Amino acid sequence: MDTLTVRIPAAPSYVRIVRLIAAGLAARLGFTLEDIEDLKIAVDELTAYLTGSRGRAGTLEVNFLLYEDHIEIKGRAHLAEVAGEAESGEGSGPRLRTELTELSQKILETVVDSASLGADDGTPTFTLSKHRPARSPSRGGVL
Image (cartoon, rainbow, N blue to C red; front, side):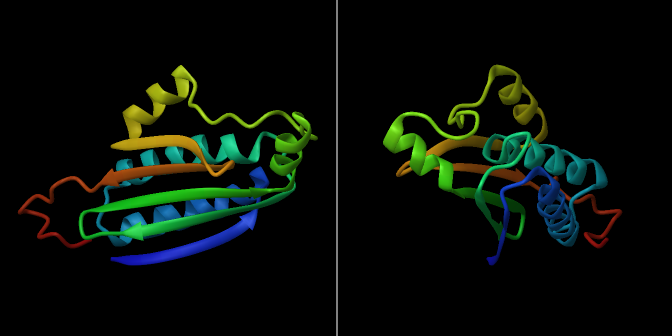
């Protein structure tokens, strides 16, 4: 298993970097173009919960775990306003959700094998996993 970790500002404008890394790693694992696009949709959906539409003060740490037949992506937000929300009951921005909406759940069920949003010791997190489809003998397993 190979692991790659990236830390970016918790702003939507930096999420494209995470999407590009996810796409590049999935291509390296032999994912189809359609599966790569699905993975990018899932990354967008889950990171939006942590960054919000306008961004937040802090960073987003994303770990990519590469297996022979699948990729796992785990995100963790290190946000200043989360600490403020915990202490005062309100933060400087919109409250962070730790549960997926019904629409998000349906989108994610369509594009990845598993996805979750939560909190670990008060820190917002997400996890997603996508398996590569079985390779056909005619492709020889090489891209």
